[in-house]
Image 1: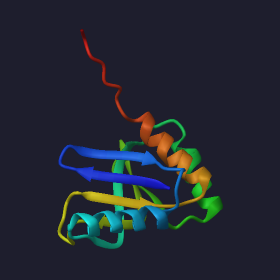
Image 2: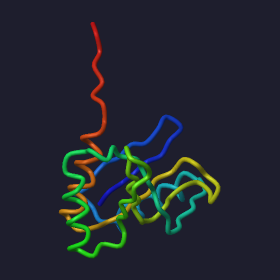
Image 3: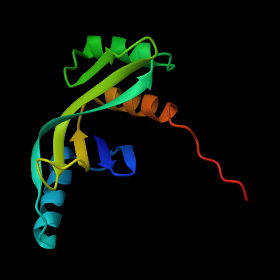
Length: 129
């Protein structure tokens, strides 16, 4: 399962292999009920940009064609970037919320490559002591 969490600070992307989509959603519903918080769940999409020259991107595109995956779309934005869109379930406090999370499931191979490609595009942060 892929989990994209959008906050005011930015996007956090992770691959969760320890539970199913249904279990994660059920746990989030229970948490909201116990905390007395509103919760909105609906079908949704999340997107992020990736440099067009990211190593492995062409392999992902070929793999998506073979798997006939309709939940992952790779679209050219310009000469430098592509947008990767993922269909899944949007979970937030309200329908108008800009912060929340999108959870989705695909084949293990698709999840692995989408996550690894995203990881490869993230700049490592270093701290000077």
